[in-house]
Image (cartoon, rainbow, N blue to C red; front, side, top):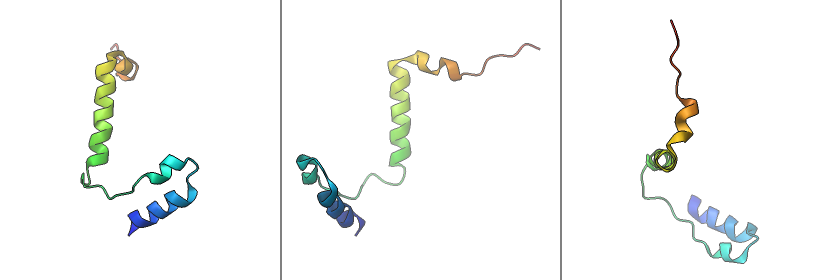
Length: 63
């Protein structure tokens, strides 16, 4: 089991004692959880400061 190996490595390699008490578990959020989480972070950033996207918007070109 990968989670058990990760837990063993955490206990063996951790420098801060409280982190060694962390528990590694398999996610139950599904395959798309990472992409949904990333999209949520982007949306939250835009809501917090809508000007952050202004530099990346395409500019109209003159004909």
